[in-house]
Image 1 (cartoon, rainbow, N blue to C red):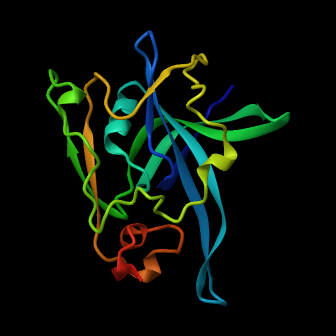
Image 2 (cartoon, one colour):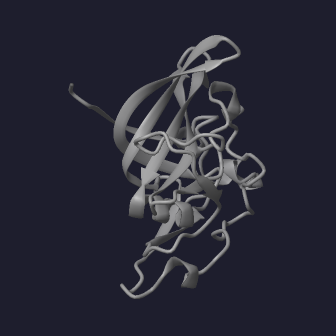
Length: 212
């Protein structure tokens, strides 16, 4: 069977959570919201045709890096293998779109990133802890104008698909592997013609008055 690979851009809708398993395997899970927008020339306004949520799973060292680098509300680019998972909820069959990521990064259209690669003998618990510094404030109160990400999928903390469906222990933050840290800072003022409402740019996503 042929695999389907996709590239999506959007905002992180849930804080990344890293799951550890008894055999040492690990996976980081987060939700990414993508909004389909178009410019209505008749009304001269940006309009939305809806928001789609994807569950993004990052394995091994990529998952370590995502857990250290990515935070709620940040704009990201994700490339990976698409699959549609079926599950039961209150006797109802539902479907959720998942991406097994091969690459994850910040969308530099909306901000500035700084990359750091540790030495081989360094462990992630020696790396700087805490959230990156954002210009204009921290968007962790659900910034980005996103709808609720929980409406399309059950709580992933109860069961994690680890290429075998093993339930694991959840931890937030670092693991014991080598990681690369990306500190993302929001860029300055963005032109209104470049930033459709809902597809938040730097100032809008952070509640910066300059973006009004």
